[in-house]
Length: 345
Image (cartoon, rainbow, N blue to C red):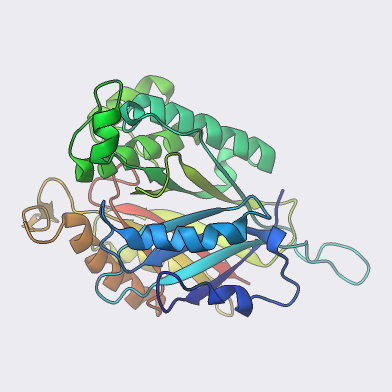
């Protein structure tokens, strides 16, 4: 089990690793579990800012066996940043007793590499679920303890489609991002008991409308062939001041749930980070009013959603370096998205 601390820093550019110098003096390289960041690319297939960031950060994760998860796209007011998840010893009193009766814990890991024809299918969902279940067992937490499972999953490129030994779910590389996110989210739902194994195909065929996870946060990228997984959970066995609450937005303007969740933060607590998924509703409406996010040929719908939800979240949170990720297939109800808030008492 790893008790953790989370330190957030804005970045000057995708290759900026100066956050390492700003960590507490007690920090050791083997303590860095994960780097979770937002970069200023387009968040689509050819977003090479994600690849640049993972390339410069991954060497700093070798000592700990940690992972990087970068989500592209900081449209609107969103600010590029990194959140460093660091292992931390339990807080204890002078007599050696625990200072806190609980704390936040994390576990990171990955799946095996996926074949191109496996991406977006039940195979990807099941393999992801098995990996999450194993990590939860190693972390010694139950599904109800988990606040968020954050995953970076692969996508299809033209080269992968051409080289595939079997037919891929799509030849459209942009659509493959959504299929991969969906399969990953269904895998998370399976691992957390939010869907059954018999319901996997129905969840995939319904594009997540008949099976989704309220605690999944998935983004896809060309910088990896497997899934990078970060599990964030509460544990009575840990002793640290970090806490989390979670929920989901019912649609892109669900201010109420954001206010409800932030109201659970104690008055004197420090706001650490908020993780939110955003997507344009596929029925073309938000609360009965037509939207044009899905019909803009110049700007992808995920970018519209990220900007709109990002502004709402930043206004509520009071900071612009918030983690808002586009593409919420299976990560909350259609048109909505999962929310996880981390704070420090």
